[in-house]
Structure formats: structure tokens, C-alpha cells
Image (tube, rainbow, N blue to C red; front, side, top):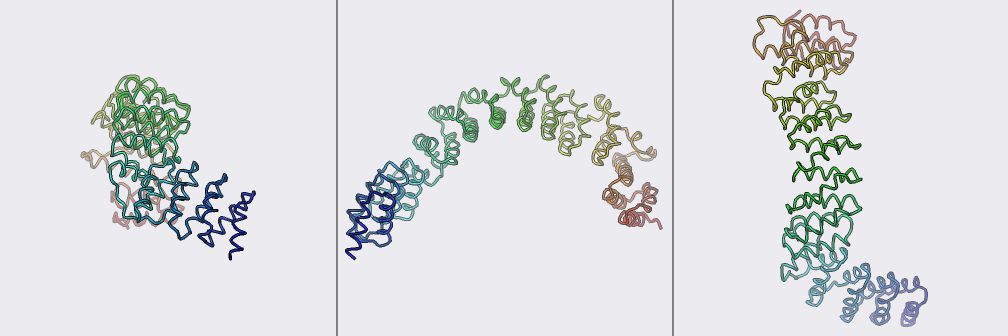
Length: 458
């Protein structure tokens, strides 16, 4: 055994770093306290893998003397070596080890901090101060909790931002935004210049949430940033801060080449109630992207300018269901009796044209809009004079639309129409349902027959 140990220790002094590492790993597998001196020298080897392997072997030894070597290794310039040293400090019941691990919570490397925190949490150790508690929170990755300790967390969180892993940098910036301190403002302003778009965006929202005076001025130049994600973040942030000084630039973003920037701009402009903004949003109702059109419709409703009634009425026949929904919600915000305005009535010819659309939902939306305008006679069959109540007029409009659906090329729509007419139970649908009895689709014929039965037609 002594001869074998001598050979391994000799290999530990080899000129070949690979052999030195393998020797240390062998000593870790077969611990022998007599190897401590050689391993202590190997723990200072110029090669990182050798130092790491040596610390693993030292940790396996059953001797208190090893603690001196492990504690010295906590000052190694390489994080990987410091991590290995912390991992070997397993006797956490001793005050000396606890003190060393508490110091390791302040290490510049997240891996070292995390390992130290895990060991301390399984030991009798308790934080002795707010600073200890703050560092423990940072070591565990709970940056928002660390920020609750105020200004003492600025430097630690800044060190995480500057040297931590990618995801930690972002969450550290977010946490910094909750600390009301001028130093944080300056740090976040610098982070806006980060080449990483996620870090920059995190800084944008941290500045926005900080409530710091001057945040708007720092964020505004990003409206012209080359990265569309940062332009969008800047729009969203300014929408919560101060929009008016930057209205021209934000309106110009309605022509941005990227749809999500245009959509963000359209939504943000709801806070600017002037003629140029209304005109720009009305133009955006023609955008090629449905999300942009929907955002424009929503903002026009919030602005409440009567000049947008006509364009919004036309948006009721938009091919995108979300746009139609937003337009329908926006119009009553502008005028509860919008359908009777001259601007709305002027759109009737175009809405009637939409009744020939191949999209049933567009036809339905256009028909309902015309019904609200009192144009029902031009859309469907003449309404009998006894139909006086709004509820009966709406039912008549629905019957007429379902009757039209019975002639649609889509068999599924014809089936749905037949079933709906049966549920409505209006005798005026009898003729259309009788025609549907000759439909080429058996399911439609059966549904029409069932509907006629509900109308008591044999």
C-alpha cells in the first residue's frame, strides 16, 4: 500500500497535467491522510482541473488539518476552484466553517454563493444582520427580496448584473428598479445601452417602475432604437409615464416596418387626444395586420372623437373578428346613439356591399350594423308593419341572416343555420327551410326537417 501511495504521489508531481489530475482523482477514490501534503501543493497547481481534483481528494480525508487548505482555496482566482472548495466544507456545525461560508455568500460568483447558501441553510447558522440576510437572499437568487433591504443591496445587485449569468442579470436589474436611490437611476440609465436586448428591455421597465425623475428622458431616445423589441418596450414604458412630448415620434411608429411596434404605438396613442392622433389612428384601421387595426379601434374608442365614427362603423365589416369586436365596443364609447349619426349612415352603402362577402361572419356583422342604422329594409325582406319592438326587429334580422346562410356554399354553415332557425321558431323561415329539404347534404336536410317539425309543419 505504501509503495502504491508513493507511485501515486510521484504521479501527482508529473509534468503532464493530465497525469496530475488523474492522480488526484485516484487519491479521492482511495483517501489516505498521508497524501495531504502532496494534495495541498496540488491545490495550488497552475492547472484548474488539477486544483479542483486535489480539493475533491482533500475533502475526502478524515482529518481536521484539511480545513486550512480548503479555506485558503476560497481565495482562488478561479470560480470553479472556489466552488470545489465550498463543496468540501461539509462540517457546517463548526463556527469556523459557518463563518467561512457566510463570507462565501458575498463571492462574486453565483455558483459559489449558491453552494454556500445551501450548506448554511442545512446548518445551525442564522444571519446576524440585515446585510447577512440580504446576501443570503442574493445567494438564493431571490433578488426582489434582497432589494427590500434598500440601499445596502445596490452594490451586491450591481455586481450580479455586471458579472452574473444572463438570467440573473435581468432579474437583478428588475430588482434594482424597486430601490429608490439616485445611484440606481444612474446604473439603470447605463444598462439602457446594453447590447443585449433583454437586458436593455429590463432596464426600460425597471426605470419605468422606479418612478425616478428623468426616467422618461432616458427612455425616449429608444423609440428610434434599431431593435424593434426595444422600440416596442420604449413605447409601452412611455405610455405609463408621459406621452405628449413624444407624440410625433410615437405616431410615426404607426408606419414602423414591424407590426408589433405599430400595434404598441396604436394602443399607447389612446392617451393623446388631438386631431393628428385621431387621423393617424383612423389610417391605422387600414393596416395590413389585424392586431394593429384592433389596437387602433380600441384607442379611437377611448379618445372619443366623433370623427372616427364613420371609419369605425366600416371596421364592423373587417375580416378579422377581433377588429370587429373592438370597433363594436369603441362606437358606443364615442356616442351611445352612434348608429343614428350622419357619419354612420354614410357608411351604409359600403356595409350593404359587405352583405355579398364570402365570409358569413362579415355578412352577419354588416347586417347587424345596418339593422342598428334602420337599414333593415335594404338588407333583408321588408319587415311587416306589426314588428315594432327592438327585440322583434333583431329577431327578424337574425332570421334573415340565417336564411341567407342556408344558401351558403359551406355545408357546415347551412347545417348551423337550419338548426338555429329551428331554435328561433319563427314561421317566416318556413319557406327557406322547405327549400333546404332539397339540400345536397343529408345532415342539412335532416336539420331542416327537424326545424320544420319545431315549427309544426308536417
